[in-house]
Image (cartoon, rainbow, N blue to C red):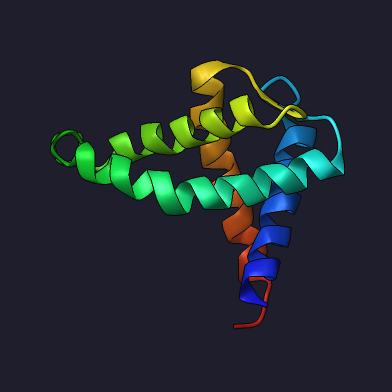
Length: 113
């Protein structure tokens, strides 16, 4: 049940960011946002920890700011895999990942724990 709620929150966050910042991220349909949220969850579960471990020295030198780059890379990867989800370049992916994280955090705050 928790997985489905997180998935719905991420779909809504992606749709909100695509609506508020159409030049940064755009989504063709609700189903594209659903596939994007699902695939983003899988990529963040499998590939992101490997990248975090491999770039640990760089992350320590930048005091954790390189994690934002890794999050952007994960969003950029998903945009390359999902045909209805588009991101405007690398920096668009970095800023989009920050905004999606903030919106999904805000939406999850409204849910009872």
